[in-house]
Each structure stands twice: as structure tokens, then as C-alpha cells.
Image (cartoon, rainbow, N blue to C red; front, side):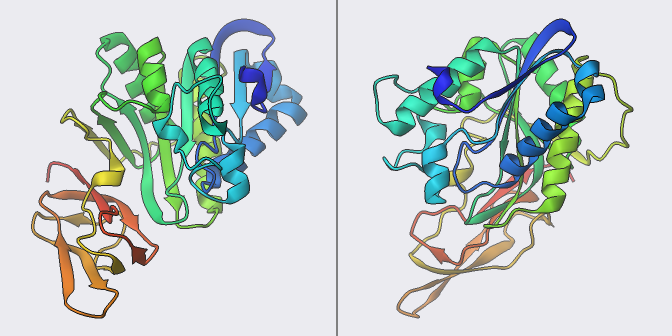
Length: 304
């Protein structure tokens, strides 16, 4: 069933571990697709890169082709693939795709899932992982996340299901996800960071040898609270209307600070949305039109 996905497999000169890297789980997230295309080109056309490789790398630039062709987070059936795993081999297009990518995850030794904020939000560059109950898996995930070398490293509760990372969690496969930018663009700086990060992780896992880059990790935070990694429910819009942020992505703010204002569509009373925690603004909505309940921002709690 995994054959329904367009995969690119590269085997090194010597046997070893198997790393899976996916992009395009959501159809409106573009930096991952561009980054994985570059990795494919490098491994296809640069013999020295392939000669250095120990083990196998499987690359999937666009997991969710149905959603990509719509330019939307979800596919033709309206389902979010990242809430549908492990899917259904006989189900709708998203369920079948979720089943196929879940099969790939279960077959690999390590997994990286690349994301962005899509068309409506922007995400501060981060590498994340679930706080796996197996300490050996958790430690490998921590190493992978730090090696990816983005400014923020975020470990969250492992209680959320339906995700690619929950498939990896259940299979005991060390896995990280990464976020970089969004806002309906393909940021070339983000593409570069993703390409570099994937090479860094391959080196950390002993699958190739390369010089260690300067450390760019600024903050490491682990939050075991239930649901701590669920970005889509944080700081919801109180009404349907127009959102104007009061902060900038990456800002450090205090509890009680205003995140932004929502103006209802009748141009009536504006509503101020404030944060109840101190920390870093890791997610900020950039698309002004909001429906009641839409997440406006995510603040990751950090120590002062």
C-alpha cells in the first residue's frame, strides 16, 4: 500500500539504519516540499553524498497529493491527514494516504516529518518530539531535535493520536517534526535550514560524516501537560471577524500581555485576546479573517 506514495529511496554503500523524511502531509506547506526536492537532487546527482551514506534514506516530498493539488491543508474528502493516521486501506483518499504513510513509518528506524504554518499561520523555527515513555527512544529524539539545529526545541506530551508522530510513537520509532514559517509563502531561508537540518540529523545518527555546524539552538523546553503539542486549540478567537496581532513571532511575553485584537464582522466592540502564560510566541496567525474558535497564537512556556 505504501507504493501509492511517490517515494525516493537511496541506499548507501554499506548496510545500516533507515531514515524516513516526509513533507507535504498538509497541502499548503511548501518549504518541506522544496527542501526534500533538494535532498533528492543532491543524493541523485552528487556521487560523493551517496558514497558517504550508510544505510537507507527514503524521501517523500508530497505525502498528501490530494491536498497539495487543492492548495489546502486537507484533501478532497475534507479530512486532515495529521488527524487520520493510521488510516484505512479501503477508506477515503486521505484515509488511504494516512494508511500508506503509516506503513512507511512502521518500516523505518528513524523519522523526520517536515511542516510549516501553511497559508494562515506562521511558526517560529522549531524541532519537536513527543515525550516518549521509552527513555531510550526519548533520548534519541532529543538528540535528533537538537542536531536539526533550529532555534527552538520543544518536547510535548505523547497523548495526541491521529498524527504521523503517534504512529512512530506506537511503533517505537524515534521521530521528530519540524516547523518553519508558513504564511502562504515558500521561504528560501527555511528551505535552506531544512536541508541543512536533515544532513545534520543523518550525521548525528551515524549515517554519514560531516562537520558539526555552529550551534543555533537557543531554547529547549519540555512540557508534559496533556495536549501540550496541540497548536490548533490555543488562544481561540472569541468571535468571527478580523484579527490584528499585537505581537511578533518569536517575542517573549508575560502572562496577561495582549496577543491581538479581534474585530467582529459588524464592526462592533473589539475583543482583546491575552495570554495566560509567559514564554515565547511560537505560532501566530497571519491570515486576518478568523472564525470563532480559530487558534490565534501559541505561547510556549519557558523559564525567564
